[in-house]
Image: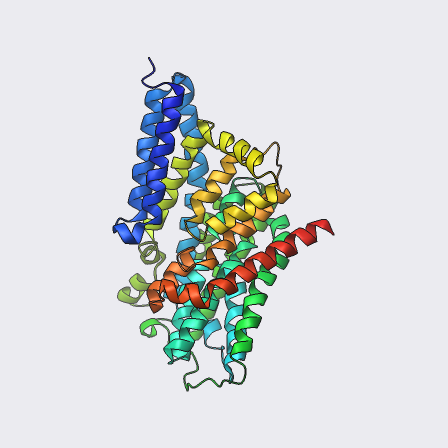
Length: 434
């Protein structure tokens, strides 16, 4: 016996999802962790869907399908996070940061931005932002200069993550979901991403022309507590990066899900680490062991991804997202404009549920793998968050680390990020046309 009619069920699902979405967007104002809102929303949505469904035989199938899709992303993220933590624990990032030196601010800005751009493509935009902002504290004692550099790091990290299947969680979602391929997304999006970076970078560096870096620090630092040698730092850094870079190739060759490649690489890294530190005192081995890195994984973010993906899955199974896509097609018309608006919306709200919703709105049979819609969505969702400081995980991290004010970023940086966003979108559309 049905508890709700279809129309009442659909309305209830939309209301619950909207309330959870608002709670996620207002996380800092409400003082409620977005993971709690996502998990609560997912639980209530699936409960309502179960109570209202008159096809109980399909309910378990729907949930199993959603769980498999969600688990693939979660396992991949956990493996990638663990590899990054192992590199960080060994002081591996000093391999890069210790070599960043410049006399002029504009030159330093270009170096920092380009390093952030390419590092983000291999790691992810959040990790890259944390590493680079930590470096800026050693390089720039002047807070005003450091804020400008940190803002540029956010733009560069988001732009760099957009064109790589492992550089941004939204691009990873599209890759694992089968909407894009690791081989095709890179040449398709790298030019727009570069334009997205170069336009604000050129404008900002022009405003700094002639200014000298007033600092004696060189950015170098010893490994944590002297636990590792220079050769060990180099080995773990290059091995970890090699594992992450090899994942797209692993998927293309074996046709296995990406999380299998990450888990395989994680096992190799764990084995090498145990062999490398086998003769060290037990206290040092415990600090450098991969199990210690697993304890540093941001499980709150993992729970958020799990909750929001399961929540969006309910709207997809209830065909609400398909109705929304048809309405947007009727009201807006052009798919390119719809995706651009989704990218702008990601500056205000989290891009993970936006992309998850878009994946449910458009059928893979109508828009096959590597179609224009999916590539443009990867670019827009990955870079649109740079327009506001709260629009991306990288921005929120920089905001917390350097206490960047929302108003300051809006006045000084948002227009630069918007210029880059629109410039990159135009570059992509021109590239597709030509």
